[in-house]
Amino acid sequence: MKLRQNARHWAFKAALTAPIVGGYTRGKLVDMHTGIFLDKADPDRRAERREHLDELFDATTDTYLAALDAGFPEAEAREITHVQANFDFYNHGWTEMMEIPIEELVPHYERYEAFFEQYEITIDDPLGTFAPPGGLPDAPATPENLEDPDHPHAEGGFADDAYVETENGDLVVGGQDQPADVSPGDAPGVEAGE
Image (cartoon, rainbow, N blue to C red; front, side, top):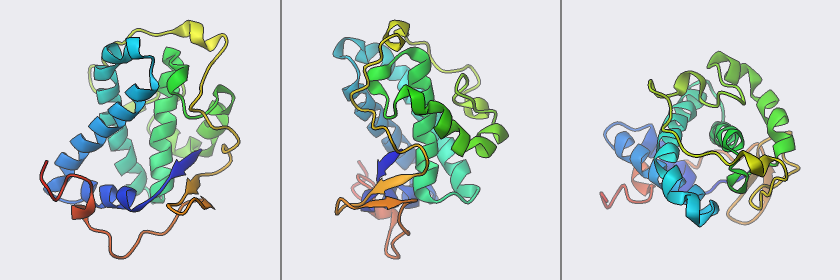
């Protein structure tokens, strides 16, 4: 998968893993991701998907932290969560929100298979043990989209590794090293206490 990685991502990682601001940062990340993916959805479907996406991204935050604890680099830990979200989008037929083409779901799964198996994550069960106790809120599926998928936001050809686009537009395989001067206060909204 092709991701971006810039100072904001490092600041969010620092804030999310820090005491006190971690909970606030989590809420900010969930809201941000819900907004990003709702913008990709059909406007008529946004309201009915909001609660589902909020809970999905809250759960994938736990996955991100577990992947970091397991020693994955930031880019791969984040990619794991995006792969989970794409599994969920696929299962619901929300192809317009997908970041990877349908034919690349299995290769992405296989790259992280050992981690996914540890937490019972599959394409059919994207959250595995990270699922909320009552499951995700229901949201109407659009399975008809799977017959002739339209995924304008999917970028193929990046299934074999984590590809990171830097702030300069360079493409780096595997991601970048964390800057030495990153601070939790650099995460958007944290310092201002929004």
